[in-house]
Length: 292
Image (cartoon, rainbow, N blue to C red; front, side):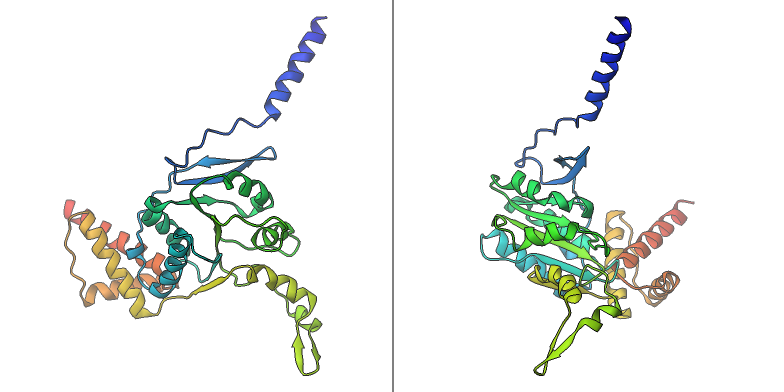
């Protein structure tokens, strides 16, 4: 009898461990951002702090891209027609920072952000259900979105964006960032399926399948590496921002510009991220020397 009782206790303990913990009570009037987290097959909205040190005005060098994203977001917040947005291109050029800065500037106008990892996109119907009855305007945010050849979760995303019988709610949009324009890997062999029909080029099925996901985004916005003048302008901005934050005055002269150029050359790339990293390096080094 004791053995049976011990066995039943172990079974009960195992069952309790297999059940996902209850989701926390979520109040969107207090929380402005959440992450969709999946544990043991069950997904739930988990509140997160999304305070960003970067504002929209800090995004130097991507003014045109910023303008398009802000305009689309303002349309969305006003209840006007707006598009899902795919921000693609070079790393470190401010794609993710732009999304976080949107929340900082427009949370007071009802904007809310839900971050979803790529592998959890298969739960998109449940995510939309969790947001359907809310009065806020939601951006579902997917960072560094891309799929491998054998990954089928993109099909669920395609249906959620456009094509499913149940329509995506008007108060939900998807903003995604990626280094790829077409999100799926492309092979040279895919082009062999293309054919000419009465003087028109018709892509093969493989190409059509791979670009059909990107086509669901009404806005394609490209981000590119900075040229040297743009990089120096971004570096100067961040040196001034950090100088004000730490109450130190730094003259942006030719010598400091050369230091910024050398820093970028050492990284092998010029972008907004490297400009900010240079400012941290230079301001930090300057303040440390003054304390010694």
